[in-house]
Length: 146
Length: 146
Length: 146
Length: 146
Image (cartoon, rainbow over all chains, first blue to last red; front, side, top):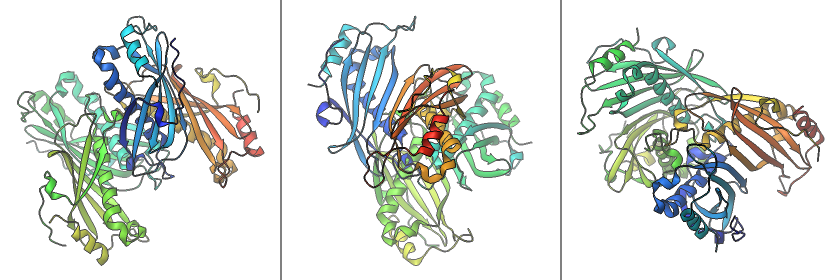
C-alpha cells in the first residue's frame, strides 16, 4: 500500500485529469433535475479519459484483467439542463492488487457530486486478484494529487 | 421485390415475433411521460429478438454486412411508469438488397407507437449494397404477415 | 401551407440553429459504435435548443399543446467515442396545424445522420389538431433556410 | 437510531420488497456486458417500487423533502442480454433524519450486484436535515429484514 496525499474531493485543486461533458434533455427526471444515471455516466467518461491519457501508454492490454468492483457517490446539489460539466479524476489509493480513483463533477468552482471507484486486477485464468505491475504502480502513483 | 401482405401496423394481428420490456423510472421526462428514447429502445429490443429467433439459424455471420439505415416512428399516445410493454415485429417488405421491418408497442390492445426500419445488406469490402441471399430471402418472406 | 426553400439536409448551410453535444462512453454498443439512442438524443437536444432560442419569446405557454408525432431518421455513418457533435436545426415545412423540423448531426463538414420531425398543435380540450397561431407561424417561417 | 437486524445483502432472504426489470440491448457496453448505468437504473426502480408500496400510504407529500445523498454499489458479476432481473429492497438503518436502503439484483439465487442508498429528510425552507416523522419511522422499521 502506498501512502498518497489526502485530498479534498470537492476541490478542483485535487484533480490531475479532466474532461468535459454536455447535459442532455433526456437526462432530466420528472422533477426537472439531471438524473443520477447521467451523473454516473459523467464519472465513467472521466475514468475512460484517465485511462486513455495515463494508462494506455503501457499498451491496450494493460486494461485486460481490471474490473471495477465498487462505486460510491455523493450527490451534493441538483444539476440543471442545459449545461456543460467538468469531470476531475485523481488516484487516491494504490493497493497491492487494486487502486482507487476519486472524482468530482463541477461547474466553475461549484462541486455537484463526488465519487470513489475501486478497480481490482484479476488473474484472467483464476479470476483471483493479482498484484498490480510495477509499471502501472508508477503511473498510478504519478496520478495522485500533488 | 416481393409483394407482401399489406399490414395495419396498429393491430396486434399484424405481428409474427414478440418480446416484452419493462418501463424504467429513468425513462421518464420532465412531463412524467416515457421519453422517446425509451420507446426507440423498445423497438430495438424487438428487432434483436426477431434476429435471434429467425435469422441466426443461418449462422451468426449472416448479420455481418447488414446496416440499419432508416428508422421512422409514429408516437401515438403517452406511455406511463411503471408498466410492461409488448413489442411486435413483422417483415413488411423485402427488396433486392434491403428489407423493412414494421413494429409496434402495445399494452393489451392499445397501440402506443409504430415504426418502420430499413436495413440494407452491404458488401463489406466495397461498402456498396449487395443482394440478399436466397436463404435469407426465404426467411424474411416467411416472417411477413399471413 | 407555406412554401419554404428546399434544403439539402446533409449540408451545414441548411441550418439556422445550432447546438453541440459530447459523446459518452455509455453511448457505445457492442460494436464500439455510438448507438442510435444517443443519436436520437442529440436530435432532441437540437430541438430543445431551437425552441428556447426561437419560440419561447412567445411565452412558455406556447409549447403547451404541441406534440411530436413523427420522427424519421437516416443513419449515414458510424460515430465513434470520444467526440463532440454539432446539431443543426431548421424549419422545413409549416402547415395549417403542424410544422416540420429538419436536423442533422455533423463533425466538421461530415454529416452522420439527418432527421425530420413532425410536431402537431393540439387543442388541449378536444385533443384534435388546431391551427398554428399567426405569431408562431411568423417565427417558424423566419426559421426556414434562407 | 434504531438497531435493525444485520442482513446479508447477497441473499434473497434479506429483502422485503421486490420488482423485476428487463435488460435492454441498449444496455450493452463494448464488451457485451450490461453497463453499470443499467444496473444503477434497476436499483432506482427497486426504490421507486418500495416507495410506492410502503411510503405513499402517508400521502404523496411524504416524499417532499427526502433527498438521496449517497449511493454505494458493488458489482459482483457481469450481466448479459437478454434477460430479466429481480431487484430486492430492504431498510437497513433508520437514523434521526435519514434512512438506508439495502438492495440487490438477482437472477434466481445468483446475486449480481448489491447497493446501499442513504436518503436524508431536509427541511424545505432551511435545507437542513430534520427528524423523520414518527409515522414514517414506524413504516421504515417495519420494512427491515425480519
